[in-house]
Image (cartoon, rainbow over all chains, first blue to last red; front, side, top):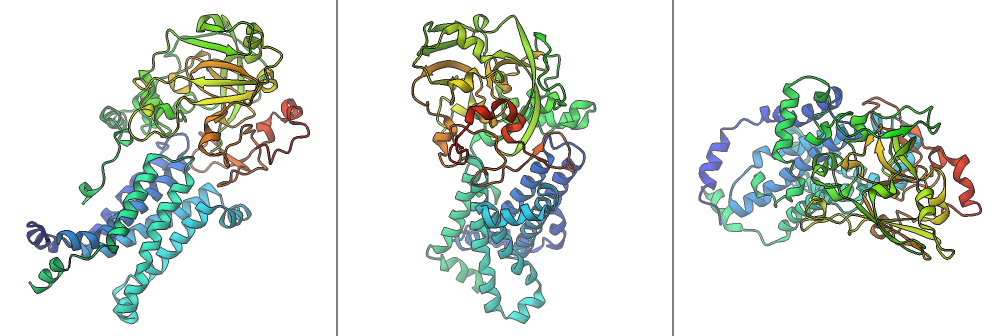
Length: 210
Length: 316
């Protein structure tokens, strides 16, 4: 079921270097930080910063999770970029967590501990981060070799719960059911559900054969 | 890849004139450029709206009001969208003249009252703390008059125990009341116990900073109950009904376990999903400290007696 444009597109994408994209992917962060630091983020800059970094973590997570279904359903392969996308989601999540600790909760450890024990959305957000962490640590070629492809792959299925927990985190922290977190959650659930559908083997097999 | 995403509702997309304007603001200079995150209408400055005749009072004379741009640019008014900047960007479409408030229920003088017949010629300045249930706060110099004065005029009957309020429903002017996804059921409704409504701190506001209310702040007439979370202070009121039974309230309908009828500011009773012990005052910047939330938002001395003997953890 590969799209006609898949092969030429894949050829083109082969020429795109990955490493500059690590920097490109941080442009939204730079923008969000710049606005917050220069007083352009409105009356509640901490919230804007927190939300901006969190939502971009979510977006990169979504794009990272698009890679597999996109390949299976269209033959377009972005697999080369997946590590960059996933790691970027991790950097954003790390910054998001850091801003929450330092600027939102202001290192009030007793309040932070209470939040971590009592607030479902914070627990869920933290769990999502904890799921991202081992994936980030084992993201190097060396770690893949050391772990062996099979167990590395198994570990990196943590991306699924991490994504779901992100969706839950966002749904749970807003005051009521609003369109934006619902939309993000729907996309996340759809991307994960697509993995449960029967794979489009022909597209992959054909690609492998060429 | 991005084009594969499901359609985002148009209400979530910043209108072109807003972001275009944002750019021109960025390029330009001046005070307005400090807040490009807010929409065009948020750029309404102090002095743009008609001045009100006001008398100073001692209420909040020690408080430092939050900047006008923030008070009018960071609002929850879901009739105009769920984003904090949406009301400022969208509420200019609202027609507030003429305006009629229906007063009915258990009163001797029910009727459709024109705004001019309700609002006194000279209103009082009341500088109040305003604490949102979302744990941010500001200080607003409201202009208005005691709700008790209006209620006295319409003569509540002996059986009246509660006051119910209702916000305008006008989808053609309120984009949040349009479309396939609407955040709340309309009309937005609120209520107070009669003694809360009659309390001298409870006012109907028709202005802030000495000028007519901007639409995004609930023009032309809104409730202000400073010891309760902000959502109790219902905006753009079209109906006031005196009732015997406790009236339904919008956020309580939306989340009964999270938003009670009373919704008094209380640092000791957390929202089920977040702490209410501290709050973030708006306008303090990135590194400003959170401050401790005060019991009844700092109005404990004046209002605690209203709730004597009540378990505030149950009646949250």
